[in-house]
Length: 146
Image (cartoon, rainbow, N blue to C red; front, side, top):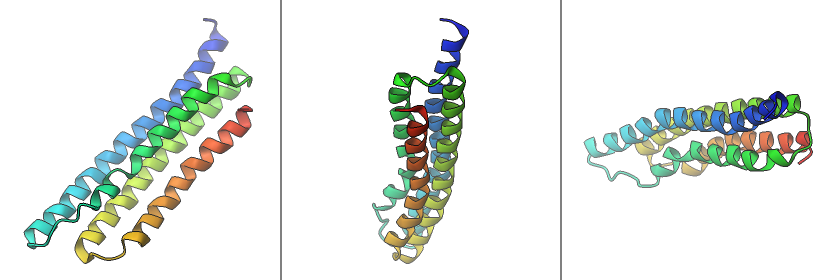
């Protein structure tokens, strides 16, 4: 494998790796928040809403976006430097979105557990963050010619 091919694969693999790291950090943020929200319900003798699991899993979709790029970017005819830049940039963006999404979801879980209201509203904010990842995937594929 020559150095240009190596740069291509660093970008491609980096995209998936950074996406996964962001999702893992996101789980470290929103997982404990959801557990804490359930605990508050138990302490208050209220039923713990199972639907809070939705907030706990929000950042996981970002791994899928990184994996999609991992599968599609190798077919690109873009130069090694372009793929390196696109791969690492998109991986960083998707990973950052996963963390941001998790922070929103953590607040949403706590608010919903406390009030029992607003689930759809909270989910819309988390969905807006999700849209940023989707844009990153689409724009990177367009820029890579995929």
